[in-house]
Length: 131
Image 1 (cartoon, helix red, strand yellow):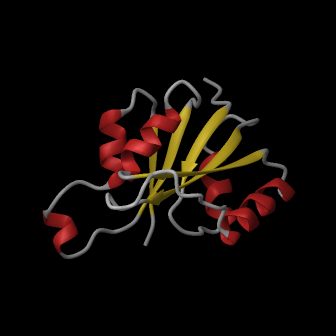
Image 2: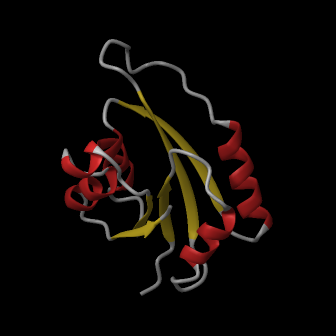
């Protein structure tokens, strides 16, 4: 199955080679959308203007220079997992998420964003562990 539209939520910069390695697992020709969600506290209105972080623009440009069609979306939300699921529905064929190592109370309390996204969406989710 060819996965044309791939959503890649990122909270921080990753090495472009990691993204290329993840995409190499798919049949060629995928278009990637880098999604960065700005978590807005409950006390702040959701109509806050958010801008594209410099690192995200640089990463998108690097991927484009490698021949990977890349878009950038920045969203604001109270809950990061909900924003990812909302963006993914009906627009993308696959969600790729880099999963960091959970430490301390994070291991015991609550689920990770990637776990919550995988449970809440009808789209396939590929998680890639990172250190």
